[in-house]
Image (cartoon, rainbow, N blue to C red; front, side, top):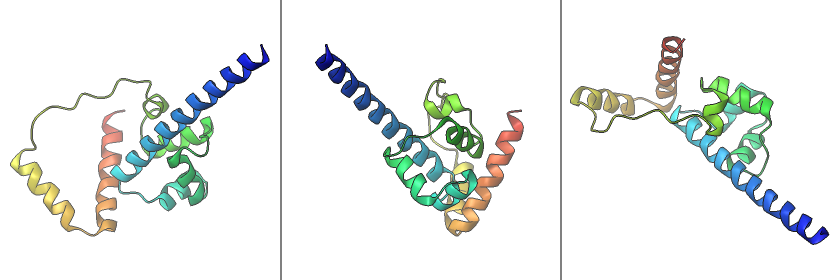
Length: 130
């Protein structure tokens, strides 16, 4: 029976590790999509840059408190962060020519300017969803 418990414990540990790797990848993707650095996210949630690095690799467990802080920074629900909600449907098709021009203009800006514009968009998007 002890062997079964150990074996079962290893399975849970393996599943847990896989979950935190997946969650870390999701955090990294959301951070990069908003043009944030690990250091900026770390300051926003009150941890070190090394902690964010470890979260993103799945080497450190993300507590519920930290997860809620990250969700608040990204203006999403905790359910969205952990993948419990259904993903928003993305319309198929290409960007309009006007949207492409805006994207090209955004790419021409410095990284700092891009982050500023993305933060403005995040605030507007959050105010529209309330």
